[in-house]
Amino acid sequence: MQRLPSTAKDLSRKILHHHHHLLLHKPSIRPLPCDVFINHRGIDTKRTIAGLLFDHLSRLGLNPFLDSKNMKPGDRLFDKIDSAIGECKIGVAVLSPRYCDSYFCLHELALIMETKKRVIPIFCDVKPSQLRVKDNGTCLPQELQRFTNALEEAKYTVGLTFDSHKGDWSEFLSTATDAIVKNLIEVAGEEARTNGIKMRSLSFSRAINKHKDLHE
Image (cartoon, rainbow, N blue to C red; front, side):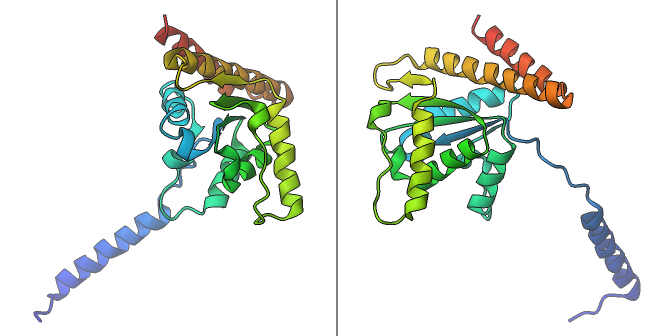
């Protein structure tokens, strides 16, 4: 193997040192906290309501969280999701026929309720009375009770209903977005009165104005 001249070695060492220095001193950019956490059953609504809401809210300049959009290989599932729920302003629970089959859906909903987030339930192709936590023998009794409490709270919260086979998708998306943005403005207003934070409330107001412009 041909040996590098000493000058080339020195230059190589300097380049490597420079790269190492850049990596060590690279400023960390903290992403904006999640505005809206979209809790949903992927097999039912990921490619429909949940995905459409995520895209529409993103276009309005908001920062929604949808697991299939925000997570990447290597992310720790519970860490990422629990952190997003802790940071979010409101939760949107898209309740669908197979929603209660998922441990993760119920865990997310329970955490949203336990952290006292404002929740907008969307009953998609299902009636509230049809939603029940199932005991399949894999959950502890206290966990089943936790999920049941969260689900009952969601069922008795005023929300939206949608029939994906007969409903008007465009009209529903507009109605859901209106409800989400108005709730964001209210939550931001409450925070502003408590903490004196006004900037995010202003951005939510801009989002609803942009949403109105798109539908005029």
